[in-house]
Structure formats: C-alpha cells, structure tokens
Image (cartoon, rainbow, N blue to C red; front, side, top):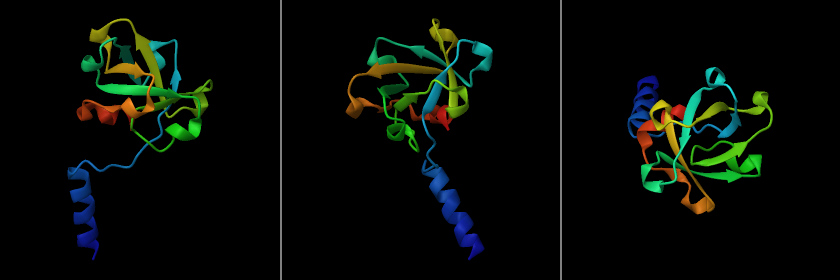
Length: 115
C-alpha cells in the first residue's frame, strides 16, 4: 500500500500537479531582500506570467494562477519581489492585466519561482 501511495505521488509530480501556494506578495525596495526579481513588460507576448492585481487577499491565497495581492506588510507575504528596470536582471517577466480572466502562466517552466 505504501508503494502505491509513493507511486501515485510521483505520477502527480511528473504530470505537473503541485500543491498551490498563495500569491500574496510584498514589493521590496531592496534587491537583496527579494526572493524573485521581476521585470514588467508592456508586451503580453514577452511575459512569463500575466498578472491580475486583486484588492482581496482571499482571491490570491492558495493559488498560483497569476492573481496577486500586494500586502503592505512583509511578514504577511509568501514572496518578496523586487521590480527591476532591466529585463536581463529579472527572474520573472510579468505583464499586468486589467482582466482577471486573462491572468495565468504563459511559461510554466518558471512556476517554481512562486511556490
């Protein structure tokens, strides 16, 4: 039975099913404090993720789908991010949208940055 459970977990991981994490973020002024360096692009096609900024923390909790809640308190955040002016410095390229339905990953290979 234990082997079946381990095999099932392995299969889920291989299929890309991972536990969701909250996307409650804190924007830091210091690059050295950040867990993820973010560059904001004007072109949706250049983005790794399309992000919708929500005003409700509960909309972002438990998800990794591009819905971000910006908290004022570093201690409330799951990730600390730093916005850079240089695309070459970025870990993640973000496009901000006004429509929640547009939010989501365009490049799933960078999803691990927000887990």
